[in-house]
Amino acid sequence: MKKLMFTLAICSLVFTSANAQKQLGGEHNIEVNLMPFGNSPIDGTTIKYRKFLDDNAAFRLSLTVGSSSDSYAYWQEGEVLGDPVSPQLNLSTSTTVFGIAPGYEMHFDGTDNLSPYFGIEAYYLMGNRSDLMEFWGPNDLDNVGQPDVYVTWDLTNKQGYSSMGLNLLFGADYYFADAIYVGFEAGLGFGKTTFGNHVIGTSDLTAFNIQFNGAFDPTTAGSAVADSFVGELPFNVIDGDIFYDYYDEGYIAPNLVSSTTLGNVFNGAIRVGFLFD
Image 1 (cartoon, rainbow, N blue to C red):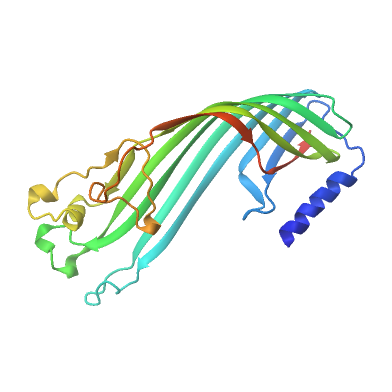
Image 2 (image 1 turned 30 degrees about the horizontal axis):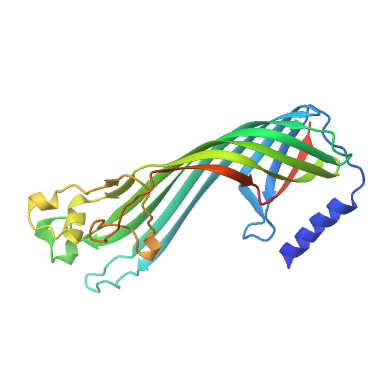
């Protein structure tokens, strides 16, 4: 209900406004995306800045920054073994993203309230994901079967990606109050996304080989993890998909290395911004 009332309030402001002051040239502009029916009504991940060089020309720069991390307990303390008491074991997943997109806009007369424009924008975006799973067990062949000297160690899956491209855009800003507007934007874009290697790692190589490779001698216990695979591999430690035993899991290629797209681009959010000197 709050989201609906918020949307109706915006619409009311837009359609009942009198003539409002548009850009004259020389102003700065900050813009965010509103998604009133989403989980987060204001998208703070991407913020756009504009500098109006004149009333009909603007330099623009969008910055995307995001980071999230979640941790879960999948074994409680003492749930694996009561004597000695086994530790709590956790899962965690984290993601980061950073992007930059400079561009240029050409504005047209429109109406007293409306400022339509064409624009061009280049962008570069990079991100990564990392999943971690904790284990409890021996990290020495002589300690197998002696839980009083077991240690906690972890297994990780990581993969990064990058995207770059060029967008030809058209849009419009509707000023419902002096220097405050809502707008839309769409266009045609060309882009390429490349995936880095999928990397499996561990904090304790011997413990890993004892747990998953049945290590029984120093050579086997010290064997390197087959830790790097070319192309995109889906993984989700929360669902148990961590690919710690890649070949035995039966995962079948092909693995996506890169993708190239040419097509429509559309900002599905409500753009809201304001001008300032």
